Length: 240
Ligand code: ARG
Image (cartoon, rainbow, N blue to C red; front, side, top):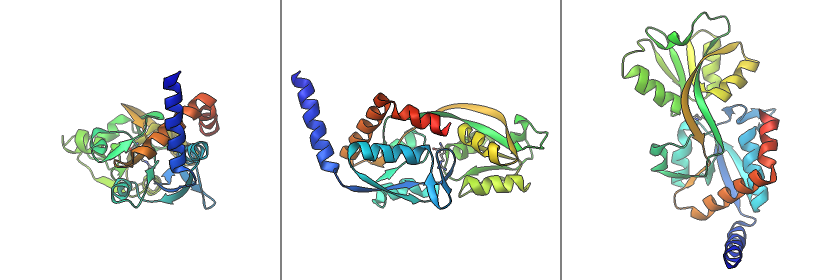
């Protein structure tokens, strides 16, 4: 009983700390159904999730679109308070920022043009492969295909997946490696298809500056409450 009271008190203080505060949230809005821009407005699961957490915990958010590759540096330098961007929790990233508890799990996938005859073997030999700079897909291709010389064609890095997909459709690359749920989303609106899943078992987390322990606790508490209330499930059904 006493413990419950203490926990409650801690939460009241925590919420009091953030009440009314406004946090700048960075994302790379090229990643449907997690984050994208529709008619000039940010939409997607991540956008709804961070807004729901903010509402639940009593703070405000302002969303800022940036290239994925610059999000972590912006958190570290203090230009951003929060990053939500389908970002995988990795050991390397955890050395520089803190992550919330996981809110999603995903694998990588290989996407080719709808009319392509190629299979997973598109990753081998003289083919051109595209990724988004700084993503786990980028690192996977670099470590498994480029360094091993399994891939001998061009390895192209793009600022956004939107550009990568356009280059794929325009036949400038033969395949793109990206997170499977996002590949599925692109396949619904572009003439592309998934030909392979690479089991990487990635967990997505929300990132904050390492020094910002209170904010991290707020976010984790927010996620827990949304899980319990069923709101997280609602968001899931809305976007997937
Ligand atoms: N999950 C991958 C990673 O963390 C890709 C994330 C890309 N996110 C985006 N909004 N473009 O590296």
